[in-house]
Amino acid sequence: MLYSFLQKFFLKYKLLIAFSSASVFLSVFLTISILKLCSFFPDNGYLSPLYFMCGNSSASQSSFRKITKVDLTSVESLVNESKEFSIDKGFDAQKLIDGSLSTFAAPASNKIDYQVNFVGNYKIKQVVINWGDYGVNRNYINKWSLESSVDSTNWTVIEGGDSPQSNRTVINKKFSATTLRLKAEAENDWIGVHELDIIGMPL
Image 1 (cartoon, helix red, strand yellow):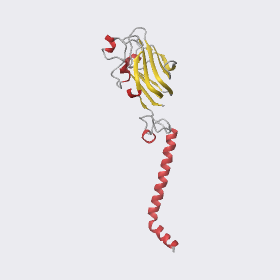
Image 2 (cartoon, rainbow, N blue to C red; image 1 turned 90 degrees about the vertical axis):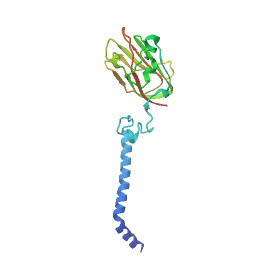
Image 3 (spheres, one colour; image 1 turned 120 degrees about the vertical axis):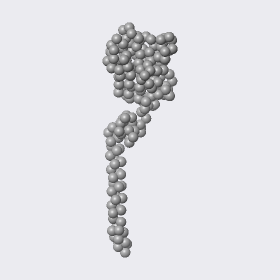
Image 4 (cartoon, helix red, strand yellow; image 1 turned 45 degrees about the vertical axis):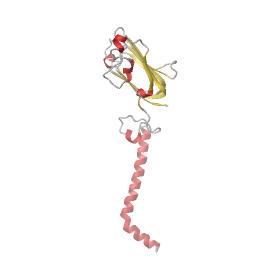
């Protein structure tokens, strides 16, 4: 009797059962596929089509982001900033990370030495230095370096070189730091930098 009941039930609802089984199979298949895809591309930037599915990191569900002022204790110039030609004109060190490419930090000197101090230890994966015209013209920057430290005493050079020959330098390297230091110099002309974009996460 039970067999007869089950037989009638399956005959009556076979399309519904088949559709439900196919839906479950498809859901499992898609879930597994997405997880494999996320693990294959573990670091997805904000512009990646995988970002909304995977986040930036399959392990941490995406903690990498653009560093803003809330992540910092201070931004300071280790080269004296002229009151008349730098601070009063709005070219002070704070413009280094104000989020605008239309402003710039310039101490009114042929050297820059800016120190960015984080609120703690951060893992950095990308730094973009927006030089503007200062990086294109050899009369301006002819030597530069980006350095990191975890104690503000011992420094490691992350990247550097001669004239950037570009208005933008992209550094894709992973490292830990509590402090970043951007240094550059020219033969004679005053120099500056428009913006320092940092992608990282607190540790």
